[in-house]
Length: 263
Ligand code: HEM
Image 1 (cartoon, helix red, strand yellow):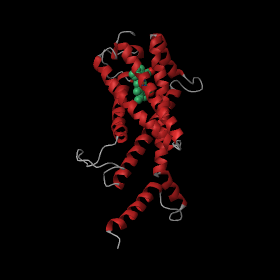
Image 2 (cartoon, protein in one colour):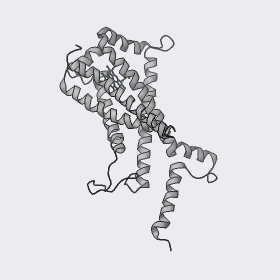
Image 3 (spheres, protein in one colour):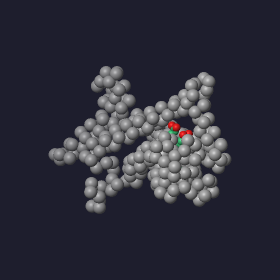
Image 4 (cartoon, helix red, strand yellow):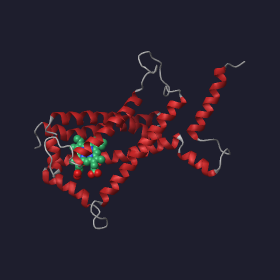
């Protein structure tokens, strides 16, 4: 005679599979199946990967632009002006910049929606305990917190809050520690001459580095590259390289300004 657990387990598994991958063929109409496929966990992982990689491309370009701080005020402010004029006369002034902003905003929203939905599904499928975790008496929820869940969830929240603070600081000039200025170069120099501004950026950038180390790995794995031991090794190297490059590249301007090498 099978116990209650043995009967319940296959049913739970079937309902989890239904939720994760949609109902099996033949149990719904084509439109229903298509919309279920779009909302399936596989599609959500792919959406998270693509939106994340778009943001990584933006970060690489932004990091490169920031390093123009070494070329002086004229070059840095000229680059900022160029971003607004790019695409003219085909596009109106700031047209190209707005296209990039809209693509970024859509990527952020898709990323957050997919992350939240996958987290919610995982919690409901495991009675609030998350994926495969070891039990512990040290944590309120009775299971160990995984490295990935910590850096992805809390790292993501820290980076999200940082972006709001950063836009109010260096883009909108609304928060202006060290003094407001119409010159982006001067805003950066004024801000990073203050220790707590440098420290707050360092904390956010380290959180971003951890988020990227796991995120880049996870994005390429979701897109099917984690298919052999050799490929996994390359994947680990690529993820570490991208995260370190972005972390160090973004840390350089605040640190050199604070050290007084750029004024
Ligand atoms: C120390 C590192 C950083 C520096 C020095 C920096 C500098 C700047 C500056 C000067 C602007 C204003 C550009 C202008 O008005 O022409 C800006 C805008 C922006 N930054 Fe950063 N940034 C840094 C890190 C980051 C990071 C890590 C992110 C994302 C996670 C980010 C995202 C953005 C965004 C989304 C904008 C607005 C672009 C726009 O729509 O105009 N920045 N940044």
